[in-house]
Length: 347
Image 1 (cartoon, one colour):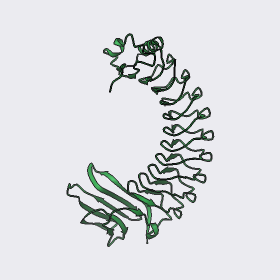
Image 2 (cartoon, one colour):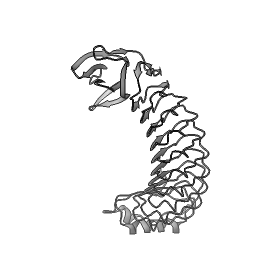
Image 3 (cartoon, rainbow, N blue to C red):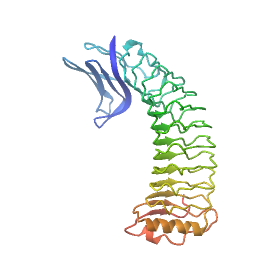
Image 4 (spheres, helix red, strand yellow):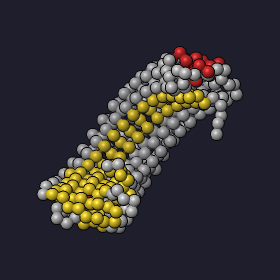
């Protein structure tokens, strides 16, 4: 039985050549198997690199490694669907397991106790048990079919990406080392991140959150919470924010006076009647269309952008619900400012 340290199995690119349908790189103790192709005819070259030399041969078709050794690797030339059989490997030393984009429906990593990175994005996994994998620091399970995910024992996690699943709940209260959390495009109605004070990036957009408390998450630099039914959002404590996207909510007030490092703000399609950006002198992307600004508010936004001195920015302001337009954008559009401004509705 081979002992795996790293297992990587994916579609994609290698050395600049298109690999269709699969690229496989599997690193074991003293053994690496690499499959790649440079041919549009889908002719694959498989190489086994060992301590004693290299063997090469050609195969065609979809490739699944089912067993390997230094003398005679074997491949299953069938579609890569269904269960990943880890029983043929000794996974006691496995630290990285990467099998993206393979339509996998089931995977068992319960015996991989040293696993630090589990990357199983873009499959069809419905159930995933990572309770034994207490050394995990990186868990990518996005674009699967998970309805539940228990990460209560994975207290070393720094990166959790579970977006595009039908998750109804997510408890990260014990994951206090989290730096990046991406749980967008789920079915979440509640998200408690009060214990996750190390978070620098939070992506929770396209859910059903009615409240979001980020007051304790003072390390945040990126907050994306658009497409939720949020009625309020307080970012006054998040002074390190450089990017804030809170579009398509139900906000009537947005105070960004403390967020002086903001370079990108998207608050379009809310119910804002005013927006003060006088302190946000670094803004280079501003999306504010679909609110209820008067021409006075709109023109003040333009005046503040003009005073900031930022060149080459993007402004989507368009006529707001009042129907009152923009009196002058000529200075921002002209060289050397060169702002890209959308101030009328376009299709």
